[in-house]
Length: 348
Ligand code: SF4
Image (cartoon, rainbow, N blue to C red; front, side, top):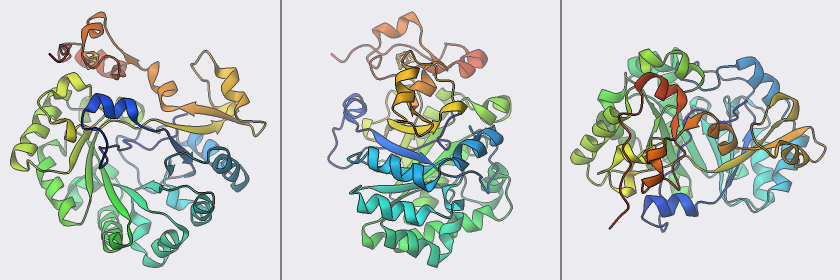
């Protein structure tokens, strides 16, 4: 099963190379740890459609296994607790403290942020060493956000979480958001951007849906065309030329004209899943199992999970972005075909 929550953000970091190709090529790999057996939201686009499989997999990430993963991957540039809703796992503060003691410099969580509105809980995470928060929020109003999360009161709670983290940024904590772009919130990108910046968000990431899980089930209702998304994002940048807004997980040929600074990418990461839950489509599946070192786990990378679900066509070979492009979701191509994707000639 996929271990990541929908739409993990990545955006340019200060001091990183400015070109999108170089940034993608030079990114460091992160460690993701999947600890949320359940989620208290019910997002219409969630890529983790198989709740039972997620429950089995993430429930098996016991403290002993988490400790082993942390020890095994010391030196990774970031550890991110993710999948399901990680704050529903009572051990999260302990895991954060372990990460800090083991020398992880950046310790993050991908969360709907609802529990962060409880200041004592957030204080526990901060004290343990968490220093980056990725909060998922999909609209600037209750109606828009909760229409997508299908969870009453999730808007007020998520915004309360955002506000708590914004107040502690002076301690060196980073606040990023992830907004999954759908037909419903696409017309409001600029307003959402301004709303989030007004709430103290450092980086506003607009994540294009992965055409898997529920996003595939409800594709016809919620999945906009890439070209529509790109043109709406370009319009946002005309109104906010210095925006700290980033468009992530969209083929680069559709976002020509968007400054490289505002083009993000889905980060490279590895994680471990239960060995008997995953059917790895890689040639070296056995070697990956061995990397679980007798813990009943298998090493999985995002590329493993994506590659067999995305496609390129022969024309892609001449594209400037071919080396870093992962291709287009097959589920997207089944609906809309190739007409939006034209190879971009190499830079002169
Ligand atoms: S390689 Fe193909 S899909 Fe990827 S950006 Fe280029 S034309 Fe688009």
